[in-house]
Length: 351
Image (tube, rainbow, N blue to C red):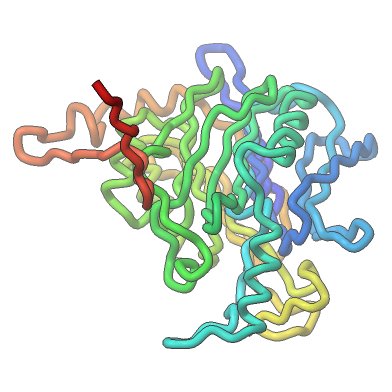
């Protein structure tokens, strides 16, 4: 069963008479100006929901609010791109070609303060949530490393251990002003008891060689968090599902100006009902079939049931990195080394 909450997806995979639960929370979220998570138990909710449906004010800080009811209802839980730290849609950070304003610098300083280090007390808090609920969490964060921010996806297992990190390789357009570029060292597909989970963030999905890296890693649950809410995005998601013979969960937030802090002034306007990201989350199967249709303009719940065995049936006649590949003609080399701006050789010893 898949339940898609205006971006929040919850799924159960059935294979060979056994059931594997899959939960993907992919939904709407404002600009989080506090780099920690507030956990709220609310037994009035009949589903396990991981809810960032509206930004909730805690004192002077904004943060995602989580509701949950029962442990072990779901097994794998993906969240949206930049879920912790926030996606600053419509912010210009005071930048024009050749100049950056003092106000823009201070806005970046605030955004920098919203980011989290990995590992940190914040990642421990997310891990504690994963352990408490018994789920594998896949969540987008804005990661702070030294003086640079990265758009990152983190994986936490059911015991709360941080077991994977995926940095976005290529921020798009103005994102390059506020985020650094990842390298090949984090191109992992994470093995879980419920399937091999990968994450490709936003327009990285247009990078054919990155997709091939995911397919070579045996991705089965392909998470695609994004802020691209255009109609054309859906054709990309359907193509990847068909090309990769995998399940694709496209995470597109639904975000209004009212979800953001009072002093946040996006270029789209300050009217509370201004839509900054219109949604469009959807789920596709390994033959490109639409499992959960995209919903725009509101938060929504979509339901579907899928069979993990469909992956093998789909690969019967096409496997992009297997029997349909031509390594005698085309090859892909992936450099998995970490690339540091400063690399220090060991101090030589004296004989």
